[in-house]
Length: 481
Image (cartoon, rainbow, N blue to C red):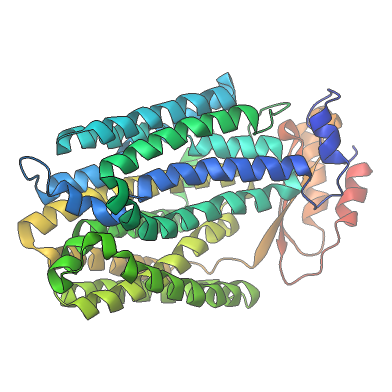
């Protein structure tokens, strides 16, 4: 065996350009693929998030004065259909190709956006939001990134794309109220549809075409591995966590816009004056916490502390939702905790999930997140309507307390980092016996916690002790041997 970065016998300019760049450095092609796909991923999230800070107020002015339950359903409807179609879209892309499936998904998203833009009642907006969620291309985008990047650079690419979610969310809380005073909520939906159509052109003309698309254990879900992932108690704790985190997020936006207006008289178009400083402060405090967690191997301590702060924030909301400065303090605590948790959870998933099932674990995690969005919107709307604002946060407090108990009893995530190595076509000649021998040799290397050999993917995955010095040459020599 010899170490190579291609996955095909073809002589292709894309592979040549990538392989001319030293290992560990992203090639221009990889950079272009990462940035263009991150922009598409971020745009889709932006279309979902932009309406959050102002939609509840807008919806309350629609004909027939919809109930809070209907408003919550409109906010969270996309989560249900996204959960339903996320994995099927990913599997369809294995059969029909990544780009064609992304075109279909983006077109569906654009149609849903226009349905919501033209809606004159809450029921039609709910339909539009559900159609938006049905264009669930997130898993396909992730798979395309895996096709277009070398194994050793994939983590960087995935982190870049994952970071667009946080940026899109933060940008939306500030930009949503500003755009609302210029073009209104229907205009935001219409703008999203137009930008989504432009994104199709970006996929066609800017995103490189993959030479060969295939399943990647670290990036795609496999139905055969679902049972093992769903039986993993540590992963189930994290899946519940992301469900609760996003349920609370969506429930909050059913209530907080009304509470701010009621307690301060501040117009919804001015709510960004509150969100901007709160978000800036939360980001400033998040970064040191994440660095401390990773560098000092204190991930569980920081993680559990953030859940504790989220629990306290929900209690604060419940007690002070009628008071402006109580809302501001609660929002500050909420966003500090939210940003730390949102950044920590994928890292912990990566550390805990079996290396060969990481993509499946992330797929289940993303599905739990989408279901949380739907449940949070629906239950937040119902509780607000039936029992008042405080009841929403009492419900969220219960969810967070349960998460705190689960997180406190979880195993501390191992201090590991993941390294991936590509093998050339000779990997196809590996038998089950020779693969086991290679895996055994790799596992015996100092610092290796877990070793996986995937001949069909021509990939070796190692989980390595972060505290150990590591030299790639020892693996390269073994693979050449």
